[in-house]
Length: 115
Length: 110
Image: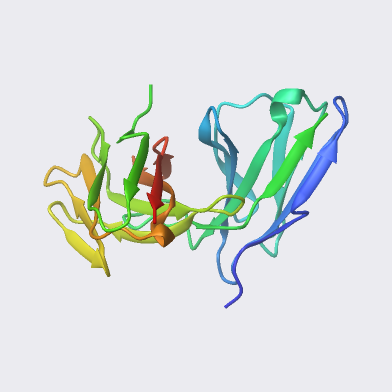
């Protein structure tokens, strides 16, 4: 079974631009979560989608948004990029939301650099 | 404040040594997972523990879930350079949220 895939793997953008990142979950997984990882803040939760609905949201500004399609693929968008948005953006999929064994399977991430 | 506190933050040891990483909280979790992440890659799930007091072994790695399901530990026996990476614990909290610790960076020198 193929793992979680993320595109692109690397991205360089200029401050003020917007960016869209894509994630394809493991086949059969209906939940997709997004995380931002930086050396200083660690792994921070952005949002989670299940069956095209946002189920949970972290403490990020409205510039960060996401969506999920009927085939469970997900995209996240960051508008008006700031230097501090430079990070590794990770997507993770799971069979469902919550439950006793809430396991997430991560993609390789998209390394975003904002200059 | 982190809901899950991991310690130590950094660990640099020689090949062959043993080590333990701790993950502590004042909250109860329905399950707890451990992940390992290598530079430039996403975290990889190592194990999930569900029952209080549960112990799971994965080759040289031993994972334990506290009796009260508030803490966990990861013990590595005879560490090898291939064990180098960032170790993350994550707890399933209030049924539908997964919270991560800040991680422990492990470096094993040959």
